[in-house]
Image (cartoon, rainbow, N blue to C red; front, top):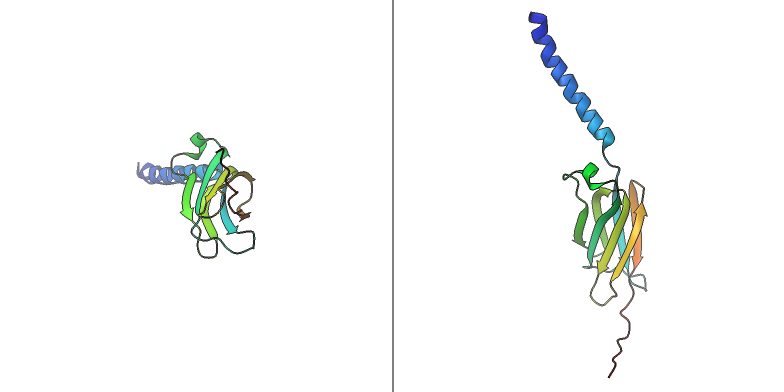
Length: 130
């Protein structure tokens, strides 16, 4: 009886450790993204609105609710926006900055860390039909 009382808590701890290891092994691969925004002259574009959204890869059911799949942030004075951790796969990057054309492109990212260098273009000439 005394041995069984010692064995049961040890068994519960081992089962919890195995469950934790299995969950981490099945977790979706994540990536850190560094976005660098520059204008055509090569100067950084600061205070640009950057939206990064996970589009396709691992299913949302497998990702679960705890994994964040959308980030909205602004670029710093060096024109950089850092996304801490997002699932690998197809990722949509959208950039809106005053005085520049809106930028949007989907990237297929399968690396642990990736730097995206984006060049923003000035707005196009507007035409009128009148």
